[in-house]
Image 1: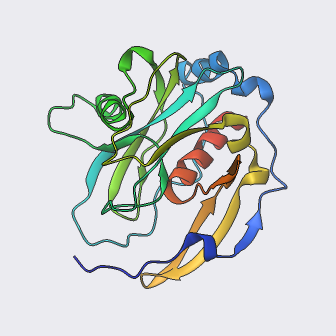
Image 2: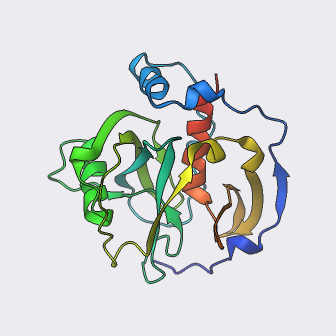
Length: 224
């Protein structure tokens, strides 16, 4: 496999911010409202489904867990991948990974990976639905599994897979005023992607790429 030259996403200029788009109504961001929306098979159109391919390898099925933590206002639990990892190193991601042969389905993969990566026990997880498959440029065919997470859990991040774990308010991520568009010429073609930077105290959490793309689809799901 040819190693591609890297680029620093922080150096890629912003060419548009979605200040013109509406926010989902606050009522749509309530836990029961989100669960009800999945239960009634809400009809909607995902905006993003496939990134430009930049790795020549066989596709691999994977799942991520989009964990909505039941705080006073819902938050989204995210991880920071260590710099030493071969794939998507140093990026912000949902807990998740490749499907194993023993996994019964995409939900089983997401729950297993979340427990292995951050120590999130399934007893605290209430799966409420899934978003459409999102295919990354690195050839992962990802099923995003959405779950409500009861507070009281105690995380034990695996240092081989996770450098940090943190939470971002769902309302922040679902506000399109925080959705920024980028274009970069890379791997032989023009690549477009979103970022949603979040200031976490003194730390900027630069959420971008596939994670931002799946969050954008979640925004579309909750909008109407």
